Length: 154
Image 1 (tube, rainbow, N blue to C red):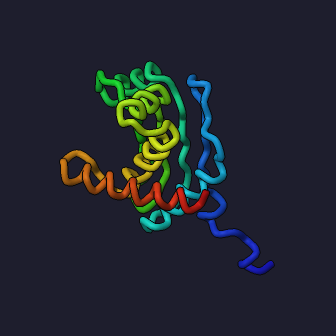
Image 2 (cartoon, rainbow, N blue to C red):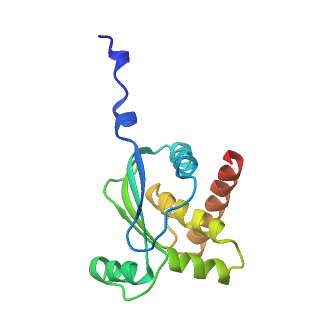
């Protein structure tokens, strides 16, 4: 058999999966979201292996924050990278409750805030920090650019 018959190893193992832990929620149009996430990773010169998105409650994510990061705070997202960039392999936990609350506070739709948080985790995996004001500004710019790409796919 020709070597061209076998798929590239990256193609074989590139997985984006969406899971509901205790939130009773999964995002709509998972294939479109997967395509979008893969496009952004490719733009950043990353190599997708696997991302598991786990949608959960505030309390579930708070327990993870306490247990694994020793942070006694509520948050909308925690990203656990298992490889260094350019390889992308991660579990990303998202609090659906926190996303809803943030959307209300920011006067935006739930879907827009959810998409922003989804791509925020990916951008962290691609090497974008957000600890300083300058880093946070660059992260927000890149999130906005990614959201525009999603709009073009819809």
